[in-house]
Length: 179
Length: 108
Image (cartoon, rainbow over all chains, first blue to last red; front, side, top):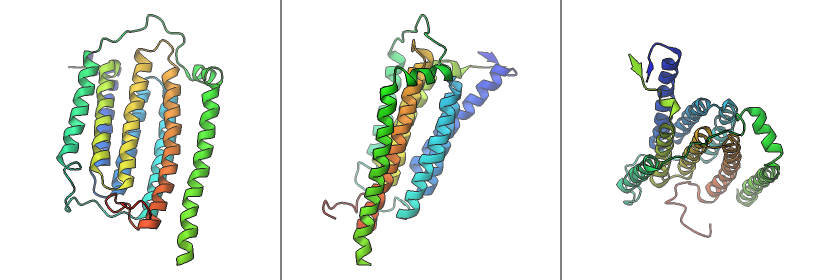
């Protein structure tokens, strides 16, 4: 417990605000009828997750979360919505039982199971740290221990870009002939 | 007046991550459009990333591993979003809908 009117107390208040932002954004992302609002909820969640990363003492990953998720992934999904023009999910037409109450029960079960498992486990705190986890150490590890993974993910991204272009282009030539 | 310091305990982050994972799973089952399922999948990835970062901060002897893993999860998620967007556009061109109930034929 820390006193409320101090730097730690203020930091705790901001942490609670960030957690509420994250969860509210996630609820908006799964519950809104229009998909564009769901993307906004996803962006709010990602801003909250970036705040959580800041509290986990890695501002670099928080910055990357803002850049990649809010800046790239959300904009990509907005483009997909713009090009595909989905109908709003009103929930008036009946789905099967899996999309209705059973999904809610499944979510609650998974949450309860994970929290019970996390509370029951005895976590082993390390006696010593190898380094302080700063950005300098992350960069050094990325170019020495994990250089192979670093190269592999660049190949994965290249293949993904080419695959996305090929997939989007094939559909265009096929329907382009008809119309 | 005093307030508990939630940001300094591992279990807080684990509960938040479990909540995000559960909401994402619920959305993945509950949504009927492909884009809605993609958004729910991103929520699941965010929950997994928070778990990695929390273990990295509190339990890992080498506190760079979790950060690097989270960065790679972000890269994979960006690639996944790009691929999913082009698949959604291709599906929309063939079926004129992205509702998963309508996209039921194997041969378009």
